View 1 (spheres, rainbow, N blue to C red):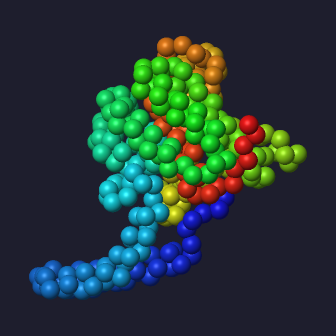
View 2 (cartoon, rainbow, N blue to C red):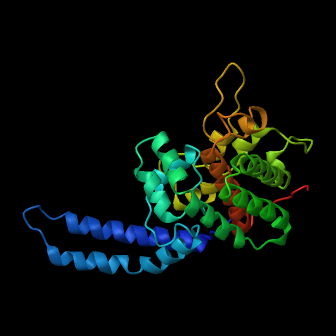
View 3 (cartoon, rainbow, N blue to C red):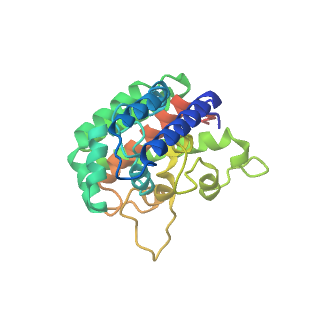
Length: 277
């Protein structure tokens, strides 16, 4: 996949970060009995050249993160739990999700903040500019309206299908994702191919490229009887276990969030996509 990050930004960040490291080392290196407060002025001088790069970096992040000083490392955990955070929901909702104690508490946050989340979905869809995705954008706008009017099951089912269409569009535009004969490879191969955070200390570039895809493994996890039906949003369960366990207001909003997040990210990052629709 192509990316909007360039080597120039990587070099700027590396150089500025090293400058900060050396200055901090110089500040803390003297014996502890000599606390040199004026030396902190040098730290400010070292950080100053980094500021334009940080501003550029912030501008490359999803709009709902910009200027919000969110804890990216903690967000990775939530996204891997299956909660979309790229482009939607608003930053204040993300903060509430980050401070929630457990899965049930985070589900309650999604339920309580549903109006704000759906409004952010509307705004994210309105920002999609690529006309190739006009049909998918319109369908997701319909999902938002259904959820706003309490028609959660319809919103969940339709959002799951739009999301699946986008996944297939990404796969068929990237030959490495497909079987050698160019055929659909199955979701397992897709999960091996999508951008991912591969270690405990990813670079900002890795994180940005993977952000919209981090909820995929949980949402694409297969299950087969007699295993219990997943309680979180799950594509397989939405398609093949249509009942009260899977179809819930929280899962409906999560499905809409996920599809909107992926569509907006595809549009923003310019990922190759070939939708057959």
